[in-house]
Image (cartoon, rainbow, N blue to C red; front, top):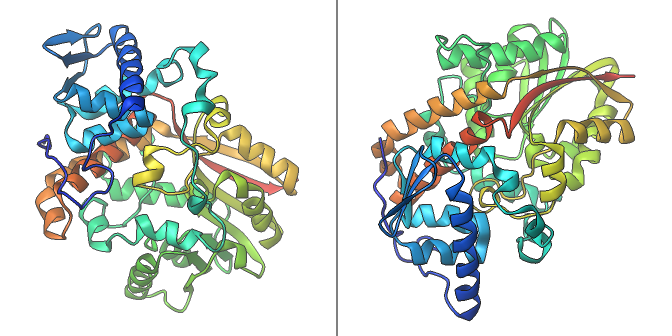
Length: 409
């Protein structure tokens, strides 16, 4: 299914109503056009622009309103590029393959000599997106408190909102692959009868349920009131209310001693400034002989260093305050600030691409139901772009996801 380009409802999406203008925009738009054309001419894409088809051939993009695209791209970089998709200034027949070509070449889309000027034009993360204790709950709510019913529409019945583990078996249904992911993390951290488990980042309760089914007692913490309510409901329905408690709490406020600390794709919301705090907190909460299992989305270390502190389309529209670590950053943070060391890791980024493909197909197939929940056409394009943008990162190999086991040295 392809979403029809639709202009945003006036007033509903601040910043998308009006195209940037003025002398500064005219200059930056001209520069953006030149850089865009130079990049596209050498890429395996087919971009229709002003009646011409540009590129060496491949996934198609059609520019409907060039002046708007380059005005937004010139003023706001990749944020503007994504916003131009939301407004329908450009479209793609199949969005993921097109974005995958861009993601594979992300480090060189802008000529390297010009990248030295990044600091002059790159938007910086605003202070109100800083993931401090007094702001994190509001940042988390922006995404996870949207609507439990929305997430139910495109996730599988386990309501797992993280990479599934297929291990090359794409015949698996998504729920089974999600359970495989959870069970592997429980296995490597040796969760079983009598294990005291702390989960940082509840999701909608599936990991806690599966840990309790093994005989563990679980404390799970979240900053999403919507997730807390539904997770408690699911845990009670599964018969484990006596083994699992779900608290609305910041991980930095947790006390106690646990045999296993588990955290699935929560480090991405921690913020690079607080990675030392995150890992030192885990270290302090682990009992002697305890193990921590972290599932983390990763970016290349050089790109992490180059983009640290930047403000992206994903930050603005999906995950405010979020930032992805690299594998090296995890090693550095644990070595410098904890007694923990990485003793096992499993990378399965292509499985995330498959997970996202299934989410996106289901989301598009249920677009009418999404609108019945009160979300508009611009939201549909935003969410589709988010899922395809993310999938392209994993399909191109630019992003990866790992399960990391941490033990005391």
